[in-house]
Length: 220
Image (cartoon, rainbow, N blue to C red; front, side, top):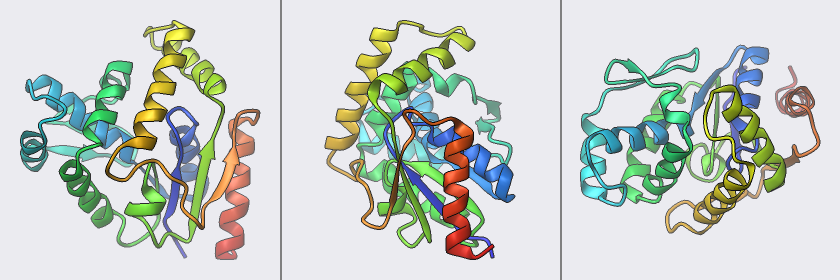
């Protein structure tokens, strides 16, 4: 029996990479909801639309062609933007557009439709509290700001992007504040979510911990 798995937590806690590993282990599909908001931010930037212009953002979402491929690639208007949406500038833009209720509602409807038959792993800020409230397995993944900044630093260095640790740490703390204090669907832990602190864990240890929880829930 395939179920849906909800993984929430702050930026750079390892949600996306762990979701990829879980999808491979379970034969599930990882739907990266954060990448969807990043794609919206990139599209808005390219179209000269302010991140706080809700009416234009929602109209843009309804008209844009966005494909989330099973292999993790993000196709926007026919272009593979998988790398372009991972910059710190777009990360902050994604946080901004995600504050818009209309934007969130449009993308949540899209996500729920995709996941209706199960077998999906979703990660984000409000998966367990809004998008997949009935998911049998909910994980709340956390890590210290310092551990997350170090991970983002190494990721950026590997991609030739911003490699200033102090600036990255400041951006992460700012992103945390924005995500936790936004008006619509702020970052919160679902009451039935299991918290995992990944600060001192390897990716493999985190994956195995979640797999054990899935096995307990499904009996597989």
